[in-house]
Image (cartoon, rainbow, N blue to C red; front, side):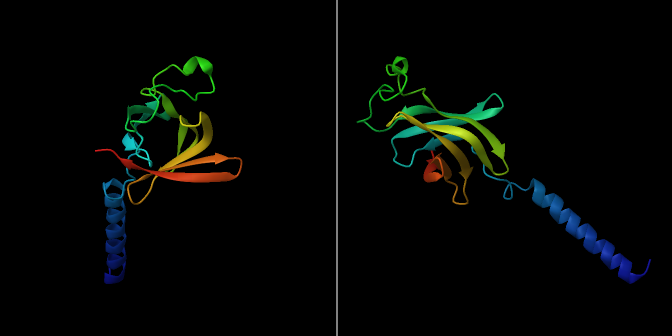
Length: 145
């Protein structure tokens, strides 16, 4: 084998090994969405987990001392006496690359839910985007310690 084909083979093996290392490197992996998150207004801590084949999030702690103890604004009157802690506020999300889409986000302050998508952004924050028709708004949650 002459020098030229050997150099090409060496370059190809080097490139392939770099790709293989990058694919298993923790630094290259997308940050996990699972765990505890503090809402942007610092009113609650939300735990995000799998719920069957989808993703969901529940309130595990209310941080705002002025917040009602119950889900007082829920559109379903039967749920208004249920405690906020344990309330599911994110549900139905399916993976879409480095994001989660086709879910719903519930706002206990207004009692409304919105079509939503989630993504952990480069800063490590969780981008929670809720939409009504074509109008969307994003909030950024931080990982809880």
